[in-house]
Amino acid sequence: MVVSSFAIAVFTQMILNKIEKNERVAGTQEEYTFPKKVQEVIDKSCFGCHSENGRSDKAKDKLRWDKFQEYDKSKLVSIMDEIIEVAQEQKMPPEKFLENKPEAKPTDKEYEVLMKWAEKEADKLLK
Image (cartoon, one colour):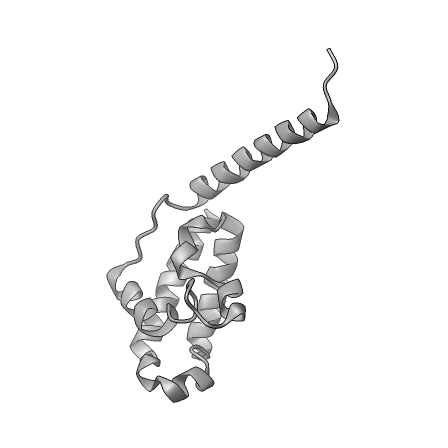
């Protein structure tokens, strides 16, 4: 029986896609639900840039809250580390954004909510 290289390539891609899908599902929930207080901060301060309709391609490349459940485990750990750093340094949203929308600036308590949530999620992902 002769098997073409095309057939082998298609079969290999199918296997790789299945492995990737299984890793994603194993690493995250099918539909991720953010805790209420975290969701409130995301809606107020983050979602405007880090979603499909965000204007900044750079922001969308870093994180898409609307695609959160699609990230694999290693990407989520990286995202959690970044959220912790951003919350500690209070460096998001950017000043330029806040000039037009000052009400989007998180309070100290809201930064703390994000940081604690990200730390807890990172711990779960690393187990």
